[in-house]
Image 1 (cartoon, rainbow, N blue to C red):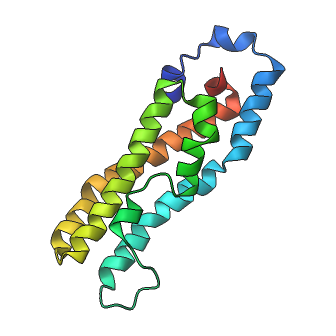
Image 2 (tube, rainbow, N blue to C red):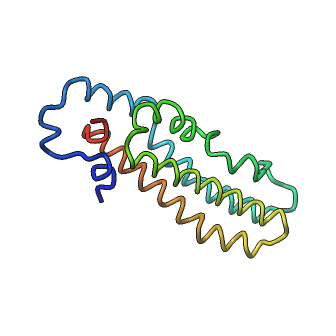
Image 3 (spheres, rainbow, N blue to C red):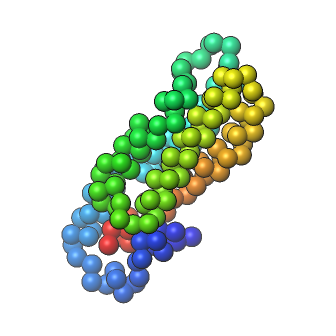
Length: 157
């Protein structure tokens, strides 16, 4: 799947004449954000939410608050998306899609917690296994594609 190469309008002929600066930009982008760590962090959220749903009796090590969880600019990926990533890639359509998917991921996680806090465990689990899982998978897929294209220099043209 070549989501980023399509949206970033990269063609083999475009890459032929790329400058050394483009290579440096790709390396800087990878250095600014460890994409593998961002993927792992988003993959861990499902387990954190499952643990939360299983331990609603007050023995939690985390205090989940829907109004904080829904903020997509507070995690490391969000800080990068709204900071250096926006400056470097914000003009590409795929970047806007990644930002939107990441925002949706946070909204779905917040809905899971809000439903659980409201006593609706069944709905919380339905969202967790439905729209939350879809959102998580989309973010992870797009991050993997971004990393692949950054390594090849495609996404920085």
